[in-house]
Every structure is written in structure tokens, then in C-alpha cells.
Length: 201
Ligand SMILES: Cc1cc2nc3c(=O)[nH]c(=O)nc-3n(C[C@H](O)[C@H](O)[C@H](O)COP(=O)(O)O)c2cc1C
Figure 1 (cartoon, rainbow, N blue to C red):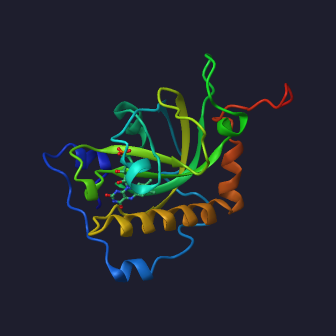
Figure 2 (figure 1 turned 90 degrees about the horizontal axis):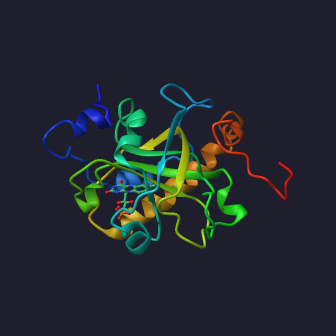
């Protein structure tokens, strides 16, 4: 059986990752997984957003919010490394912030849990890219996420452009997958906070 991400992390070295091939690229499906989320999904995660290496935004045009190690365990203990999709929400802090109301809605996300083989990271991370244009950073703010499905394994790449293309494809797959009614309904899950519109919920 494929080891969970946590089992991989308990070994001494980074797990091996397959190199992305042309065959993989041209054969990618636009929608993946069942019509209804299946075990171990849904998985709920929450934690304070941490700074990663900052390469997601700078190198890949895909900024990611990193979750602290201790808040990854509910997922790493039951799921293998790879790329996943679901919904996420940045929680409005009590102090004044640069966040707009549109920024604190429940939004579609893609998530990478693994060792970023392209960058040869030395530890397991979980990074969430929320599909939304934020006008300001939200480091240190609380984030909640519901992971609903698996897209693909994490891969190694011979070029940055090939990784960027796959991430763009992942975003499309995630949006297609979330269109399905049984997935869409999780955007209204009581786990997320209600956003008030001028005092009206
Ligand atoms: C949807 C998605 C898919 C990703 N897939 C891979 C992958 O297959 N291989 C890989 O090495 N990194 C992958 N990454 C991780 C990026 O390498 C990572 O987000 C980047 O290094 C930024 O990390 P940083 O913010 O810590 O600098 C993926 C990231 C996202 C958001």
C-alpha cells in the first residue's frame, strides 16, 4: 500500500518522486474522482498561515499559504503526498487588516502536500493556493480548509515551465471537480465562518 505522507516523513530521507513525462502531460483528465467525496475526504484543516520560501508567488506565479506542521497531521496521517482540491477561507482577524469582504469568503483552492521534489525540500509541507486575487498578504492569519479530493501525485520536473503548466492544469481540474453538487455543498459547510454583508448574513 502507498505510505501516508506522515509515514514518508518518519523515514530518514525524502521519498523518491517520478519525473513528469510527455505521456502524463497529454493524458491528463479534466475531471477526476467520484461524483461524491469518498473516504478519507472530507478532511478539515486549520492553522495560522506561515511564510514558505516565497517561490510560489515569485517563481511560479502561484502564491501559496503554508500551514504549520502540527496542523497538517489530520491529513498527512490518512493521505499520501500529492495535489488535492477543496475549499479554503482566510479568517478575518480581530485587528484591522487589509482584507476585503471578498477575501474572507469560502473560495476554491488547490493544495500541494509533499516535498516539492522540483525544489528538493528537506521536509514535508502543505501549501494551499486559493483561487482568488488577494490585494494583500495574510501571513499570520487563521485559515480553514476542507480537502475534498485527490488530483495527482507530486512530480519532479526538468523545467519550471512544465511545473507551471501542470499547476495551471490542476487549477482547472479543481474548478471542474468542485462544480459537482456533492462537492459544491461543502462551500456552505458550518466548519467555515459566516461572512456578514452589511450586518445581513
Ligand atoms: C497545485 C500545486 C501543485 C504543485 N505540484 C508540485 C509538483 O508536482 N512538484 C513539485 O516539486 N512542487 C509542486 N508544487 C509545489 C511548489 O513547488 C511550491 O508551491 C513552491 O515551491 C512554493 O513553495 P514556497 O512558497 O515554500 O516557496 C505544487 C504547488 C501547487 C500549488
